[in-house]
Length: 117
Image 1: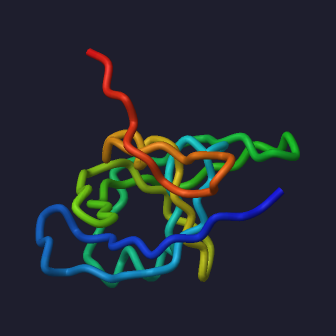
Image 2: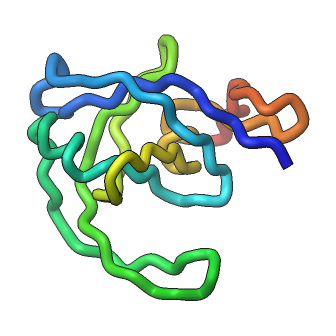
């Protein structure tokens, strides 16, 4: 199985000029995006709750969660973000879907998501 990495911009929703660009692993199996806690704090993004998560190995963990702006090309939206470990930059399905994107598993690229109301 191939891995897909893309350059994505993440910003503080209260001050969008505070932004950084990083190489994110696209993980269509993850619900929320995960970003290095130190990077989020440098952007001034603060957690607003703690939430339990289930890892692929069955282990349950608690992590802080906040809100961030994600941008890929002209696609830009706010989505939940998990405060992760050092150097972790993972883009999950919630962030992709709110931007109107989906991962094409064959070509390993992002494509427009058919939007249903």
